[in-house]
Image 1 (spheres, rainbow, N blue to C red):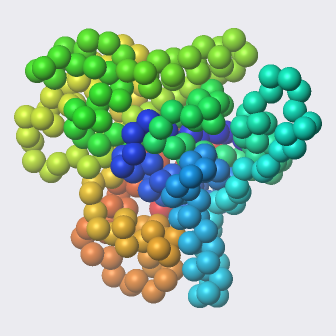
Image 2: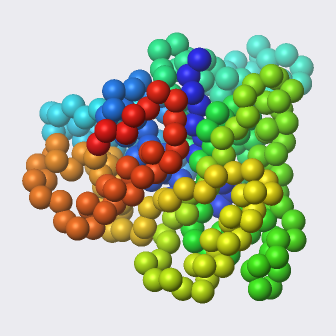
Length: 269
């Protein structure tokens, strides 16, 4: 069976699509067979990113290692049994179609609570939750007191992950490896940054996730999207000398892939 990687949280603007594209492409570049799905049926940022890549390769006449992106198939509503959810069937059909020849399936979830996102979390072998380094985003995971030090209780998203874990346990599946990424971490040792680190470490022990380094805010990510490119593609399109920011971003991706500790993956870029 393919190892399923779900990139999810219930807040927009945390960098889910950027993380999804770079993780999927990094795996493809290391020789793994990767399938990809976007469950945000309205915005489809990850899907557009993948299609931009396909269009760029076709117009430039080049072949770049890529994940195989697919849209969710439609289902015959009349064929559904009483009580069956059409979204469940669409996701199940998409995963089954990719599992035939893929080692990894990466699923990008919308920045809101949907039925598709809920089901996808229960399928996750690895769950990646990008988080901007602020207490506004931390509220996605748990509620804290006014000083940002004492955790009052879990958020609805953490409870959703807990429910997904329960469903997997009941089905006899291995536990979800939940990895929270700290994105846009400031370079300076500010008080808020230190508080965030302590709060995350405290919460990680309580509800069971690992904290990993994510991406800093960089212009390069916004520039790559229209062509569907990632940091790993720059030399293939003629960029002979990477600037300091690009080198640092590439190292961040390397550190992220190592931190994920995916089965059978040796990070060699």
